[in-house]
Amino acid sequence: METSAATQPANGTVHPPEPRTLAQTTAFHAEHRPDTPAVICEGRTLTYADLHRESDRVAHALRAAGLVPGDRVAYLGKESEHYYEILFGCAKSGTVLVPVNWRLTAPEVSHILGDSGTRLLFLEDEFAPIVEGMATAPPETVVRLSDIEARKAEHTSVQTEFEATPDTPFAQLYTSGTTGLPKGVVLAHRSFFAIRDALASEGLDWIDWRPGDIALVGIPGFHIGGLWWATQNFNAGTTVVAMRAFAARRAVDLIRDLGITTACVVPAMLRMMLTEPGITAKDFATLRKTVYGGSPISEALLEESLAVLDCEFAQIYGLTETGNTAVCLPPAAHVPGGSLMQAAGHPYPGVRAKVIDGEGRELPPGAVGEVCLHTPARMIEYWGLPDKTAETLVDGWIHTGDAGYVDVDGYVFIRDRIKDAILVAGENVYPAEIENVLEGHPGVAEAVVVGAPDERWGEYVHAFIVPDPEQQPTPRDLHTYLVPQLASFKLPARYEFIDHVPRNPSGKILRRELRDRFWNDSARKVN
Image (tube, rainbow, N blue to C red; front, side):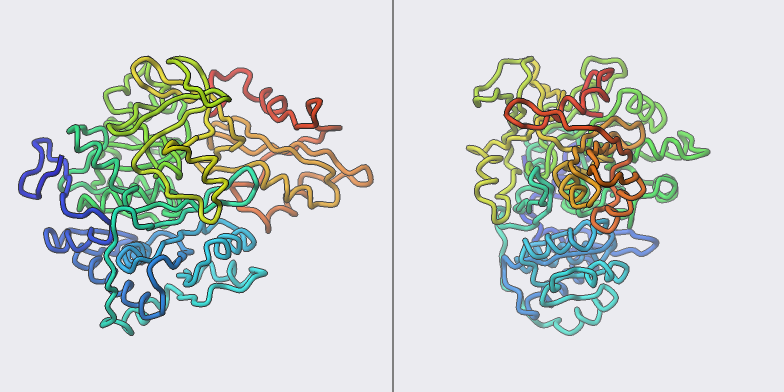
C-alpha cells in the first residue's frame, strides 16, 4: 500500500511513496519538509534541507577522491550528524558504508578494514590511536572528522552520476562467526525499506512512524538495530535524536526534555534507565512506543517497563543477516502474564518462518529445531565468503542458528542457540575468538568460553581455563593479557580453573555440559 504525503492513513502513520532507496530519501524530504529537524545531536540540529545538502557534498567529495560505486567507505566514530551525512553520501555515490565498532581493538579494526578492502576511512579524532596502533597500513585515504568541512568544500561541483536500485549494496556490517573472525554482511537498499512496506501493505501499526515523531536512537550505528532504526525514521521524515554513546541518565533526560515519542533500545538499556535514581513515569510521559530487541528480555523486566514507561511496546527479532527485524511481537500481544510474553513475535506480512531438524526437514508446530527466516530484507552475501554464504542463505532462507519453535498461530519462540554465540547487552560474542586469544597466553593450555546468565547484561562471558602445568596464571594476569586484544564487552567477567575439558569420544568439546549448569533453573537457555 503506497500513499502520498497528502493522503496519509487515518492513523497518521507516515509511509512516503517516493524513496525506494536511501539515495532518494533526503531529496524527497528536502522538497516536502525542508525545515523539519532531521538530526538532533548534543544540541546541534540539521534540517532535512541541511542533511540533503551536506550529504550531497559528501557524495561529491567521495567521487572526487577517486572512489567508484562499490568501493568501501568505513566510518570509525560515534554517532553524530556527520555519521548520517556520510551514510547518505555513500548512498548517493554508490559506495558501500562500513560502520566500524569503535569499541574494538587495533587488531580487530585492522581485520575489518583489510577484509572489506576499505579505500577511504572517516575517522573521529578520539579513535586515531586505534588506527595508529594497527600492525597493517591504514586505508589509502583517511579523513579526520575534524577536517570534514574543509574536505566537503573542496568538491562542491563534482557530479556523482549514479542511480541506486533497491538491490544495490549499501552497507557492510561485521558480525562475528564461530571461526572467530568477523564476517562482512552485505545489505542492499531494500533491506531498509522491505519491512516498512510489509507493514504498509496490510495497514499494520506494529511499528509505525507518524508526523511529528521524535525518535531516540540509543543503539549505535555500527549495529544493525541502530542503523535500521535511524534509516526507518529518515525514510518517514521524522526527527532522529542521536546519542553519541548510550548513557541511561542522558537518555532519560532527552526523552523528557525533547519530548521524544519513539525509541529503539536493547533490554539492557531499559534496565539501566529504570534503575537510575529518581526515575518516575513522568520522565517518559511523551513516549508513545518503545521498540526493543537485540537480545531476549525477561518477563520481570518487560512487565516493569510496561508499567513505568506506560506506552506501547513492540519486540523485534532478527539478525544482521535478515536485515534486522523479521519477526515482531506487536503491542497488542504485550499483556502481563499472557501466553505470548515469551514469544519473539510473529513474522511480518511477506516474511516466513519455519523450523527444521538436523536433516533440513521442516518440523510441525511446537517442535523445537533451527529457526529459519525468509525475508525480502535478507542479506546479499557474506563479503568474500561464498561457502559461508551458502551455509547461511539457502534458497532464500536465512538459517539463524537459533533453536526454537513456531506455534499453531505462527508465533516464533526462541528456546536456545544452536550456534555458540553469547549475547552481552545485545552484542554477539563468539567463544572461538576469545578462546583463540586466551590460548596464546603461555600459562593457558586450553580455554573454553560459555555464556552465563546476568541480570544486568543478559549474559556474561565465563572462561574455563586449563592452566599450563608449568605456571598458573591468575584472573588478573589473563585480564591484563586480553585487554589490548579484545573489545571490553568480549572480556570474560569470570575465570574458572579446571583440570581438563570434557570431550565426547570423537574429541569434540562438550561445551553444553559446561554451559548448562548455569542455566539449569532457567526455562530458556538465553537470557
